[in-house]
Length: 259
View 1 (cartoon, helix red, strand yellow):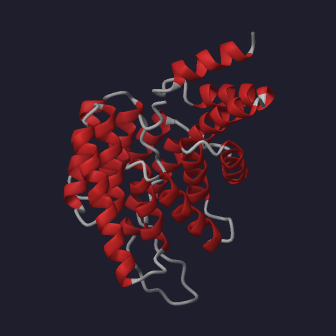
View 2 (cartoon, helix red, strand yellow):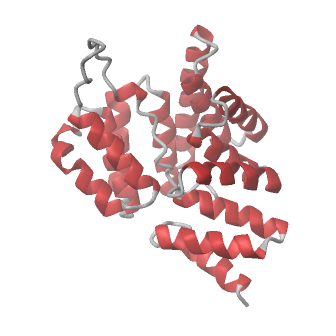
């Protein structure tokens, strides 16, 4: 089952947001670059590719100097199926912020689209190392824990990854949508079908626009014999992401379920 041929647009933006000291009565200034990146990534979650590109239009000249812009542009290119260009753009993003573990995960995901497995695994190992170093300095660093779990998931260390995502979910009192989503995906990868449905359902309750959450929940629903949920989820996935790499497989599953 090839479940890794997608870049997930759940980009953690903390590394790209400036720290601004303001008086209590003042509204914090809006960083137009950070706002554009945040908007683009939100659109990418629902595979609203055109809208994501438009959100980045005003800041596209910053792609050579701002890792967040470069990474978001790379993910737009992925959704446009311009995979070679996406890899080059993601490589540029990673060079702009070589110590950012999240970008190494995204870089590895982009290499997988071109079946450059060795390079992908090397990027995932770099991400795991960077995240582990951050956790040594602060074992309560939830961002580092999340990224470490992402890297472990990509390296097929599924039990470790699930434990990491579960810790992030617990620490956030169940409010971390990204961790819920990745926990659900990980549970699909390790064959924990009901646990996958539970986590992905909670993620979708908080954000109904995560296209791939429907795809993975649909896969788990199929294994559980929940035909109604399977049909609903594959239909929702195809409506949101008709051009996604897994779209043809989702359509085949949906057609079979409706017979």
